[in-house]
Structures are given as C-alpha cells and as structure tokens.
Length: 353
Image (cartoon, rainbow, N blue to C red):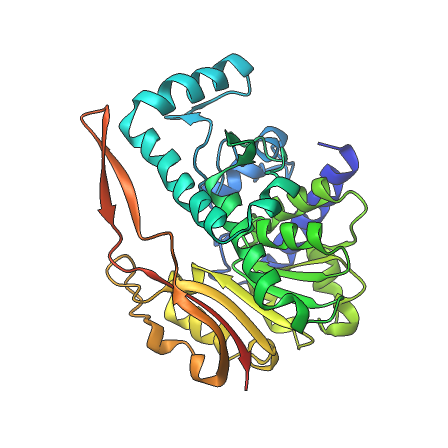
C-alpha cells in the first residue's frame, strides 16, 4: 500500500472514531462500545495503525464481504502462486462445497452472457486490488461478486444511462467496498458517487477506489464530518464521497440515482425506514434495486416487497432476478446439492412519478 494512502486512511479513521466517541453514543454502526472484530482485522484498535496486509488481501481473504471463490482455506490464506494454483486446480475441482462456489459464480456469468453484457466484462475484468482469487473462464477474469456488478452495470447502461446527465450523482446505500461505484466510474469518469455503509466497510472502499483511480478526488470521513451539509455542490467537487451511516443525516439531496443491492432487506426495520423516508431517497428521480421479496426467515425484520415505495415510481424494468435463486451446498466432501433460497429477489428500476 502506498504510504500516503495509508496515512490518509489512518487520519480518516482517527477523525471518525474521535468524533463518535465525543458524542458518547452507546452504539454507532460497526464500531460500537466494543471494537468490531472485522474492523479490528483492518485497524489496530490501540495504535490506530492499519493492518496493511488485511487491506491488500481483503478480497482474496475476505473482510466483511464474502466473495466466491476466495483464497482462504479454513483460517489460512496465502498469496503464494503455488498455493493459489493448488486451490484452483485441486480443491475447487474435487471439494463439493468449493465446486458449488464456482457454480454460483458461473450462474451469474451465464446470465451476463445471455443479456449480452460480456463485452463489459471483457472491457472491465476483475481488478487485482485486494488480491482476489480471480477465476478465468472463457477468456474472462471474474469473481462472483464482481460479475454481479458487471450485470448491474449492463442493466444501468441499458435502462438508465441515457436518462441521466453525464455528470450524474449516484447514491449507493450499503455500498460495501464500492464495487458498483467502481465499475460505473470505469465506464463514465464524469459521474460522482456517494457511498453509504458502516465505517469499516468504507475504510476498505477508500483503499479499493484510491487504488483503482489514483487521481480520484475522495471525500473521506474528516472531509465529510467537517462539512456543514452534503449537497450537490459539495458532492460534485469529488469523484467519491465516503459517507458513514452515522453521518447520513448530513446528506441533503442532489442525488440523481439511488441504488441498493440486497442490504435493504437485511438491515433492521429502523434503518430501513430511515433510508426510504429520507429526503435524498425521496427526491432522487431514479431507483435501481435488487432485494428479497420476503426477508423472512433469513432475517427477522419482517420486511417484504410491500414495504418498498415502488408505487411512487413509473416502472422501467421489473423481474425476478435471474440468479440468486439457489446455492450449492457440499456434502460427503466430494458432492454438492442444489438448495433453493427461502425467498427469491426482485430486480426493479424505476423513475419517480
């Protein structure tokens, strides 16, 4: 990791931690009174120094967000080329559960091919940032999570791109480390992206996006925290604005497109309601989302498709998502079986009426 980037992320982390501690909150996102174990994999809680190796390998040895296939075997991980070769050519070919991971990825790949989006995957192969166990298939480099966002990019280009200004402002709720904002930025350097997630996720987003786009203007926690409000004028000074959940109320508007993939149906109802009733969400002219028809029984928040304000939009596209219908579970080590998810996902693109 570049030393300047390391120093920038550490300074950003210290600002938000001190800011939150001064508010004496009992709970604030993934920090809480006790340091979250996943965040501790990224930052030493005593010194505030980054664990550089964890950042450099956060996709191959997943932190927060799982990806498949990955380079972790039980708790062991290595970047050694021989180790990775053996994973791909031995474990992922004979182990039932691991073969299932590959099949899940190929289900998405096949959908991307059917939709005619493979040219995007060819143009934007899965980056090496985060040391993923990229899988080579039919001349394409991919992981499960990455190829999903190539699908999302294809849908964006097919149904939304021509309806948005070139310098559009995109709000991604539950952005994780920013893979969707990343592919949008690769395709259109003029767009502006506001990423909202828990602070630990955004530390990784800072690393990922700064590594992909070394000249990008990134508003970190300190920049956002010191701003009076986050509006269109502020956002358009930057390529990426990293907005932790606890500072979401600083966002006043100026959004052209809201996106969310899966996480609205996974969060508690309090946060779900806070997001969909917020002014930035209600004023944005376009919505692009993929979520469960029914969060139960995977989640106990009682959120269903009926809770989304889809009636406020003119439908541009709506279907059941063609992938994420099943997963593949291993059994007796060498075998795998197909298991249906309790609820499928709806895919919706709409324009606010």
